[in-house]
Length: 315
Length: 275
Image (cartoon, rainbow over all chains, first blue to last red; front, top):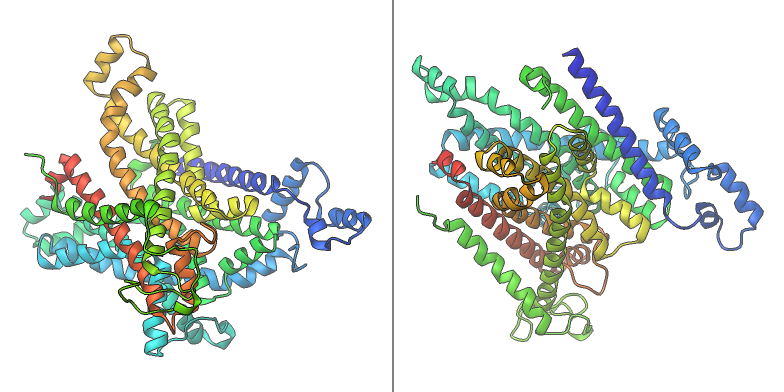
């Protein structure tokens, strides 16, 4: 297990370094000088030069990469070109919306998908299964931001149960904050829950064909007992993988959904940064998102290795 | 067992064919010009003249949806093309040199690209080149590459252990020729199924990208942008927000049904497991 962990950690570090180089290189090829852009057309060359120095834009690409990557390791993302405040501060504010939103959506996804997938597997071939498969087929095809608009139309415009958007901030209390995130989280969760429920169903059905299930049935367990005691635990492994992959879709989805509900999260930050050519913010937020995806998949890998010793061997 | 087209494939194909047909027809004819603004007829309800009504600029919704189908399908097809053209050779190469350094490099490279959701790739590309439909194609295409590489490597690996491949090797064929002449035709099934799935994901991704302004730019109609424009008018004209969404759902649903049906048809192992 130690060797497995060490190998995965090394591969995690390499992935993060490779990802940071790719992101840095992409931002690097962008034409235009942020310093000149910040100061406007009438700036003197000396002022531009001084600002370039201050922003750390002088020096070779390699030394700038080391500066940037070194800063990232210490939580220093640099200064925003437009807001003139540390990027870490901007991100810190916005992540208080995006991260709870993604977590809320993930929780809903699991809460919906697990029972639904379980029922479909237990009632395989019966009307309940058929209905669930049809509903999830539809759920997969619905774009989350459109579903979000339909939710607004129904619950905000027609029923007035929720506000159509905006975020009161956590200072207003946990309940108010969660309420503002509820429609966005439902919109994010529905398509992902549909996918996960289908994975859960087919994974359970696969395990139900295994010999140990037959043994369990033979020693007198009912179908239901065999399903809950033996199949569920083994069937969860593929479900975990998909959940790891889904996290990246949830993060990306959260960025789009924030636009529907006018939530002040990372999504709004990054789109504003793109239009304002605040590249260091774009770079940092992208790095953060990719970092999150890589780390989550690392954690899933480790969870696997812990659950199934066979997987610790090299593929 | 006789190979019959599954019912869900037929239903899916029929739905998708309707959209493909609408997109093709839109090249030759649309009921109304989608670039012509007619403020006098704005937000008109469905009528003989405008079967699905008009939008806030008086543009015909049916014509907009037809041209939007063209945008969605074109972006998704080209993105699948990029993914296949780059991903399949990489996957075949990795499988032919399985266990070697090149296999390791390709697979780790795959993992790396996989860590970038297509939206993030699109954000990066847009930051560099500005938004356009081309960038949406490239972003979704890059996202597709590791998908096809993984799928083709996995399918090819199991083929490499088979007797007929061994026979080809004994006959002195090089790995490149074996991959091209024996492996590729035998993984075509898997690739077609995956292609259908990526096609439908591509339509969803294109809608998302153009919704946030990273895809097709005005005046090119696209379903995602129609939704973005409709959002501010959701109180007064919910129809504008509902129609493009329905178009996306139906097109994606059709493709998914087609994909599932194809998989059942082409993969007898799955078919048996399901019964």
